[in-house]
Amino acid sequence: MGIGDRDYMGGGGFAPRVRGYDPVWVIIGINVLVFILWQVADGRFMRLNFLVSRESLEAGRVWTLLTAAFSHKSLFHLLVNMLVLFGFAQALRARWGDRRFV
Image 1: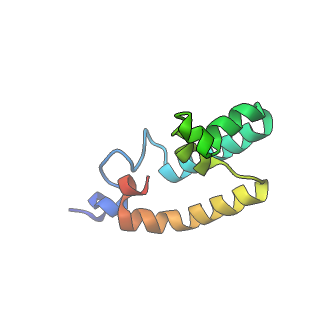
Image 2: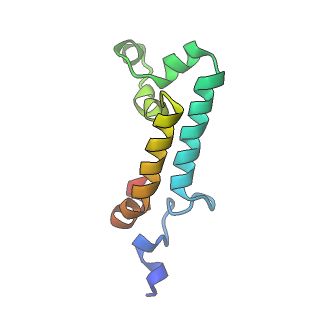
């Protein structure tokens, strides 16, 4: 077995490269897209689908528990979070493996 075949080196499984894309960059891209949506989309739609509240959960919008994680209040907030994600992602992927990381 070569070093490239080891799990922590990115070989095998579905998550290492989802159709050739690095999962870290996919997550960063989703965060940027949601930030842009907050700037241009209908505010009511975004509040209903990207913020967690008791009312949302009682109305059955349980996906807000996940989608809220991609919402950022300001550009600075987004940049700092993505910088930290990028900085820690490789260490976490090496320790946990891509599937658990994603």
